[in-house]
Amino acid sequence: MREKLTIVIPTHERQRLLERRVLPNALASRGRILVIDSSAAPNTFAARHPDVDYVHCPGQNLTKKMQAPVLERVRTPYMLLNADDTLTNPRAVRLCLEFLEAHPDYSSAMGLDFQTGQGGEGLACPQFKRFPFAVDAERPGDRLLQNFLFFWSSYYAVQRTDMWRDIFSRCPQTLRNYYLFETYIVLMAAIHGKLAKLPLPFTLMEAGPSINDRDPRFHSSPFKLATDPRYGGEVQDVRQAVDAYLAERAGIPLEQARVFVDGALAMYWLQDKPVRTCADKLRREWQRLLDKTILRTRARARRAAARDEARVSRRCLLEQALDFVGPEGRADLDELLALIRAA
Image 1 (cartoon, rainbow, N blue to C red):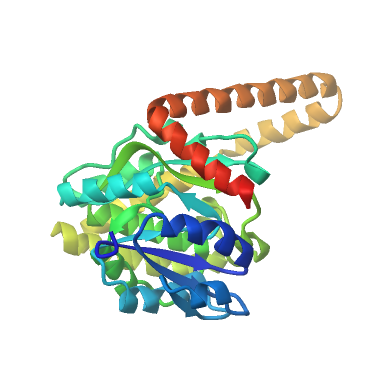
Image 2: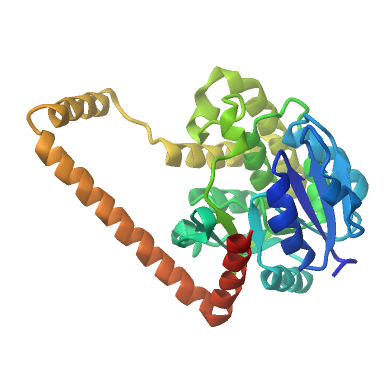
């Protein structure tokens, strides 16, 4: 496995999680480990570990801190990006790697992402409703539309390293927003090759605040990325880079590539916030006024019913996901939950 896979762990000010959870979990996959740490102080545990390649780059944002280490230090044919608050299932990593080796037309492979509450309490799998939608078209432009029709992030999949080299060698130097960077990765991955979704529990993440949410410059919804002037330059540079990559990979004119990219982004952004007419806005404001006044009791009952319905929906999705991954998958999840609870 060490000759085939490098697990790259970008981290920032999460020393305890890195030492007690993420690194022990990553080492169990038996791949090479590259930790890229932008924390103010270096992590001595990771820096001194004989099986960890450690890079300390204090204060650098995600895009900048990852670019040089990935291009210079990753020498295996496959790579897995592993968040510093997420545990990855070692069995799923191995099976995804085997799938990619057997299917050269696929660039990415992953399973289902599960979530748990603080301390490993409870379990959820909200993305299962999007799992059945394939990203396997032969033409790169068609794959873009497949991927963004029901958005699926391949950001943390097992992927071919040559894809990551393309991503970072073409990455706009102006790109700093974390969420736009993830969108850029997903766009480029769909162009590079097909995405396999395997019936496996792939990751488990404990609920908690994102470090990026503390800085409004890096936190934004997809719709805000599309409309807020602060991000206009970055969005335009990303579009141009992705347009050029699609034109090159698909062998189509740049103008045609631009249609595919703009269509994929439009579907993604409109899923976040559909377009509303002036009449829609007036009806919404009128309803809000009624809910705060003469229809207050009815509004409370409606909100309570909506919460109950959401809980039932989440429970049904979880049951379907657990049935889908089978007994072996449930055993994998139990091991990951035990690691969270022990730490």
